[in-house]
Amino acid sequence: MKKKFLIIAIILFLPQIVLAAPSASISTNASSIEKGKSVTATVTLTDTAAWNIKITGSGAATCSQRQADVTSDGKSTTKKFTLSCKSVSEGTITFTVTGDITSGSGQTKDVSMNKQVTVTPPKSSDNNLKDLKVDGATVSGFSGSKTSYTLKDNSGTSISISATANDSKASVSGTGTKSLKYGKNTFGVTVTAENGSKKTYNIIVNKPDPRSKNNNLKSLAIDKGTIEFNKNTTSYLVKLEHEINEITITASVEDAKARISGTGTKTLKDYVNEFKIVVTAENGSTKTYVVKVARKDEAGNYGKLSTDNSVKSISVTGYDIKFNKDNKKYNLLVEDINEVEINVTPNSNVATVSIQNNDNLKEGLNKITVQVTAENGDVNEYLFNVYKINNNVEQKNEESISKNTDTKQDIVNNGEKTNGKKIWIIVSIIELAVIISLTILLFINRKKLIKKRWGMRWN
Image (cartoon, rainbow, N blue to C red):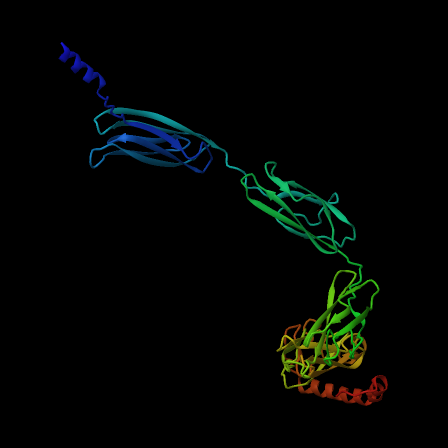
């Protein structure tokens, strides 16, 4: 009897062996899509060694596929199958899975399940404005397709921008009260369509700046050494003995509304000392004057100062002067301008540039000097003879030669004006004879007048 009870006890306490049954599930990558978009269903089979299933999409889309196979070793595994369907109408897409699956232990299970996805109308892509207003009035020339508007100058402190989207489902940002700063102001109004696409409308407003832009010095001096000051010269070199260990820089401005920084007493070290005097105009624009002080060391040396005062390039805006570094003189004929824009690039970054007599040009001959000064003080100079004529008087007798103001070009010695299309004028023998005759008569009649008015000659 004892043996029977022992066998029963052993059987009762043996671990139970549980064989996993195959299973299937379905999921989609979205629960809702817009019409015309696609959605993907994923069918996952677990503990499956053989399968025979069909996945179908119906309703707002039509698609299907069949999957039937077994594992190569007959063991259970996990398999995934996907089916993508593109919606063709609004409504619902129903994914249906049917068939059967079998585990490695031989258990079989029927599969029947489904998953639904809602198809909504496509989102609007309309990101246009229906109306755009500034200070309550529709912007002149407004059109939903035009995205940039330049308004009239406005000297006020602010403007109010309002806008209405063409589509009620779109959103608008960038409206409201906007502060105006001096100069160009750009404000963007952005429309975001229901589908997320954006369009920005720019409103450009210029606020005139009545503040002075004069950032010139009236005077600049040091208490030891000499500076030959000119408001258009922004860099100076002063050489001092070793015994001088400090200087005081003083300066005054042309405009009382401007302010100066960088003046005062400065301690000197041996060799080159550089001090910057910054003038800030009322409107905030700045101009920097540099005072370089070369102080000898105890042995009487200034250190190694650059002697390079050569020029890489000189150009005149609006003219082709055909620059050559060895040509020191250039002649220009100009009309009705007060200043010539001369651009100078020295070869050395420690060389300084000064342009003299280039403001308030008078009629007749003006001599503009360009000076490039090396760090050691050596000067390289170029001369521009600028002959200014009064267009209303001087050109009267030339109207018969050229009346086309679109292609008219100034005559330039060493160059020709570049603000216009170059043309070649073919003059007939008869026309040339008339021009020569007129020139001779004008020369005879005006020779004394020119000498009397300008007291100089063309060099």
